[in-house]
Structure formats: C-alpha cells, structure tokens
Image (cartoon, rainbow, N blue to C red; front, side, top):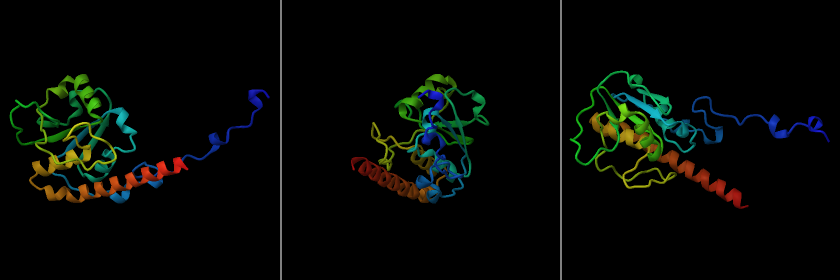
Length: 202
C-alpha cells in the first residue's frame, strides 16, 4: 500500500497529556499541593542550564512557585546585566583559602543544574566565576532521595537556597515549612517511581 494511502497513526491524533496550568506538570504529578508561599527578604536570581529545565525531578519548580522574590533565566551564556544590580553573591562552594563570606546586601545568585553543568556555566560565563561566593558551611545531609549526590554536602537547588536564605536572614524557621513540603514531594515522587517500576515488571 502506498505510504500516502496509509491511515493516520492513532498516536498522532491522541490528545496531549493534560497538564496543570500552574506548575506545567502532568496532572498526576502536579506539585501544587506542596507549594508553600514564602516571603524571602533576600531576593534570589536563578540561572538554569537548559538541560535542567525539562527535568521532572528538579526542585526548582517548587522553589519558584513558593518564593515571593525569585526570578529565573534559562540558558548557557548570560551577560553581566543578568543581575539587576551590583553587590550580589553566588551561592556556590568556595576554595578553602577564600575569605569567609560576608553579608549579602543585594541578592543571592543560584545556578540550577547538575554539578557538571553548573561548572560549565561558570566556565562559559567568566563574570560568574569572578563573583564573590557565598558557600554553605557544613550543610546537613541532603533530603533529595530521588536524585543521587556524587559527594557529601551536595544539595538540591531548593535545599541549598532555603538554607542560605535562612542563614542570611537570621530566620531559618521561615523556610522550615517549605523544606517540610519538599520532603513530602520527594516521598510522593519516590512512591510514583516505585509504582512505575512495578508496572514495567508486570
């Protein structure tokens, strides 16, 4: 039968899987129930690697929907004017001989992606690498059970940002509800993964 006379593939006519208009995730995986509106005093700017933007296990969507003062840009190369003003600090590990971090008067810049991708962002954006850093000192173990950390002290974007803001603002309790909601979301996603694996084995 000539190709132009074949009936259309049923999959091509299937409706797109319904998505939540707020979090833009498939309805069965909607994370809106875990959103905790949080009025952060220190503004946050996130530069996200494009390969992280479609990551279903990423923590940034929950953080973005929860923090009142957060902006996000996606890309691999950014101009220095990506920051609204001078005086920002980069949330990123510092060398052992770097001076202790000072206070953040303008805002906190966060890189979102795997460690390999964030290192690439620093390499491709020399102005980022030159920013003064604000590292987390002796962070607690990660709660991020659905993604494995390669080294101790590596946290999700949501965890690291909440811990940094709590320290900078002197009010860790402000971010406790969001971190607790993150625990719930991670547990929910882990259960979803288990159900998916069980279905594949049947």
